[in-house]
Image (cartoon, rainbow, N blue to C red; front, side, top):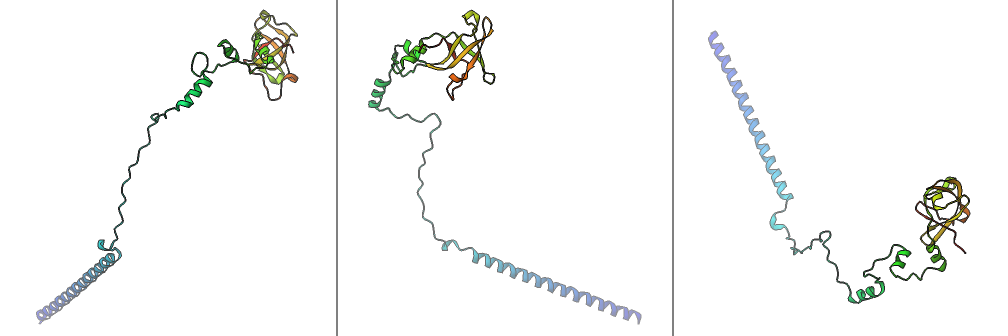
Length: 211
């Protein structure tokens, strides 16, 4: 009797397990079918969003244009000079010795035989005076300059001199009592210096120009 009851209970358990497994298999199959249907719907949506190749309108082809690369630096071809312009340049700007060399100073131009008739008589007189010294240092705040010449060059206390740059007089200076053999100090006469003009190291010092 007990054996029969045990067998019946075991059979019921097996039936329950089998039923559960069958139900679980059905659920898995259902989920697979739903997933497959979802994938198919997704693929159909993708195909609808992407037009087929046959429905696309081909764009007109544009012929390729040749692009000339820019020339490398230093290789730009020079244009031929206009013969008439070259002749005018040669006739108007040629200087003694050939070419278009411009003298650095009026004195150099005169030595090369080039006319400097654009200078006034006063400018020519200024250029003709020999320099006795050069400005070595400028102390504008204290109103004096240091010259690179002294008693050996004949400078004396109270001597009146003028500062020259090219053919222009920049101003007047007066030698003080601070004189050595190769150096001297001179006071600046600010009243004689034009507005906007400054005396710089290297400017030449000459005797006063007669006016």
